Length: 62
Ligand SMILES: Cc1cc2nc3c(=O)[nH]c(=O)nc-3n(C[C@H](O)[C@H](O)[C@H](O)COP(=O)(O)OP(=O)(O)OC[C@H]3O[C@@H](n4cnc5c(N)ncnc54)[C@H](O)[C@@H]3O)c2cc1C
Image 1 (cartoon, protein in one colour):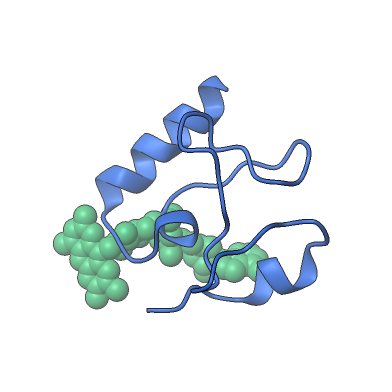
Image 2 (cartoon, rainbow, N blue to C red):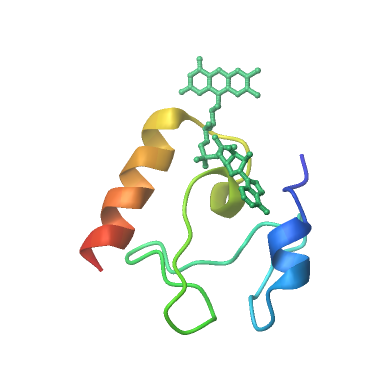
């Protein structure tokens, strides 16, 4: 399944994978754009609420 392309297409400097997912550092949620973090389905592809919530905690901590 492909991720919603709106944000990756309109946000300069955001590295995107072959399925349109935003590439993040799994340990921090950091994206290729300074100061921008991502998690949840846009980073992993379709997954679960609990994974999205966990990614938000990781990003908040980082
Ligand atoms: C039919 C269905 C059933 C599911 N059932 C389960 C289940 O039983 N249990 C489970 O754990 N998971 C389930 N999931 C998966 C779960 O819904 C997702 O993994 C979870 O919602 C991902 O959360 P998220 O915050 O990453 O993304 P989302 O919940 O998709 O949130 C992204 C938000 O960003 C908004 N948005 C997008 N673009 C923009 C923009 N440009 N500007 C402003 N806002 C924007 C969207 O409107 C949306 O509200 C289900 C998914 C589907 C489709």
